[in-house]
Image (cartoon, rainbow, N blue to C red):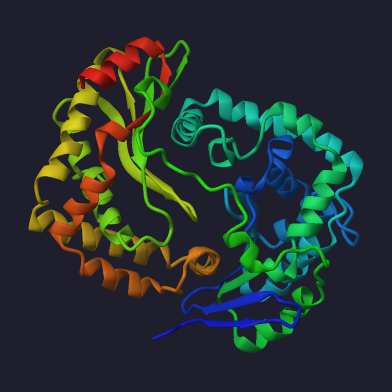
Amino acid sequence: MKHYRRFHLANGVTVFHVPLAGTRATTVLAMFPIGSRYETRPISGAAHFVEHLLFKGTEKRSTTVELSRGLEAAGAEYNAFTNKDYTGYYVKIDSAQQELAFDLLADMIYHSKLDSREVDKERGAIVEELRMYQDNPTMKVDMLFDQALFGDCPLGWEIGGTAKTVRAVPREALWNFYRTHYSPRSLVLTVAGNISARQLARHLKYFAEGRALARAPAFAWYRQSFARVRWPRRPPPLARRLVVEERPADQAHVIIGFPGLPNNHPDRYAASLLLSILGVGMTSRLFVEVREKRGLAYMIRAGAASYRDVGAVYVQAGLDPARLPEALRVIREELHRLTAELVTPEELRDAKSSIAGRLALSLEESSAQAEWYAKQLLFARQLETPEELVRRLQRVSAESVRAVARRLLRWEEVRGAFIGALTAGKVRQMMEKS
């Protein structure tokens, strides 16, 4: 049974209402299907730059302090995020003060000034943010893996751009990006938590006032107007599939992975179970074999990323560089086992139960409910409730898990990113011998 409502405002905004019992919180989440993969190289980082600038003042609230003061006085949680294919802004607030969230978010989205002085000041702040990511090897190795997997295309670029593009992008280009893509036609507004239909109807006046520019794309434009990734029929030589950054460090930060599944692929349920068995939690195969039995790593996990047209599956770990050859060998052995043998009935049962349990716990939060339904509309061909996802997981067989492992975990397609006291030549030798 559905526990949400979906409808449209006259100006094109899509609204989800997800009422939740037993909470005093209300989350208002505004998401747009625009992210860094829609950029060209000269404006790389524009989506992230605009996200910053929406907190720098509107016609009604002229400064960051004026935007933030009311929210902080209310004890609200608020922030924004830019991904490769979407951008979001949210406020989670005591339901007694929920109107403030609607007023402020709509003001930011429709009436931000992008003042030229604020643009120039924020260039420096963003460059420092990029430097912070560069200096953090756990974050940096993730960026390097995208380079290894996707190469020189928007999915392989850093979401925030580079120091060069951030310093050079004109204010006019940022303004055009903002005015073109922050349109009611492409806005998905999800409201979850303690809010009645009557309250919602009253507060939607703030979002109903926005008008789309003639040049603003329709929502369907974002589903197809991006640079698609085409995997080569034959993988490039191993040296071109590895990215190594040599720097003094006591630990090697490693991601190895493979081309994965796009958002709506029918095998995504089997892939979720595969990765749970492989590397999620303290009873997963990698945790037991790499950490518990051999002490090769403190952190090791498996994960996935999905986009409209492609995806990735990966294993990430922090390892002793001297024992990296042994760790790579063990990881490869575990990957091979999943392609050669059926997972046990106990593993499959526990993985299904684990995913369902973690999902249920996460969705106790109004913010998680809001993000769930927003992403469903942005990326799913058909809206799927959490309950429907769990039912589909329950139908996955051990044979389906092995089949998706054979499709995804092909060592001849492996990509890798490495940071540490390592040379590219040594890493290539390790990967060839593992």
